[in-house]
Length: 83
Image 1: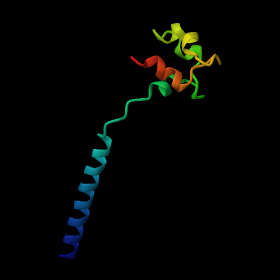
Image 2: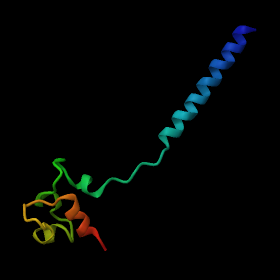
Image 3: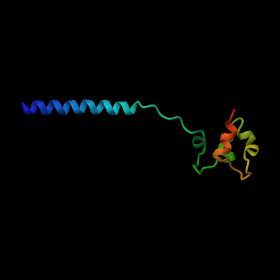
Image 4: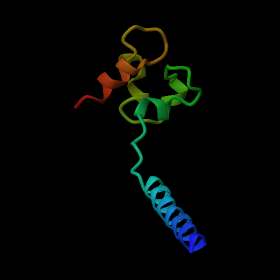
């Protein structure tokens, strides 16, 4: 009798654990931050090469580089993406 109760508890725990893990796998993912996804070398800046070919950004790089340091910071990209 004890073995049956223990086995039922173990099976119940295993079933509920797999349900919890399945829920974690189905959790929605956060959309990637545009800056982070563009920053290929992850140095915190966007170089002209990293935004080359992006219409509205790559072709306006020097205009968007407000501080003139040759790279775009997150705030400069955010300003460029404002409607």
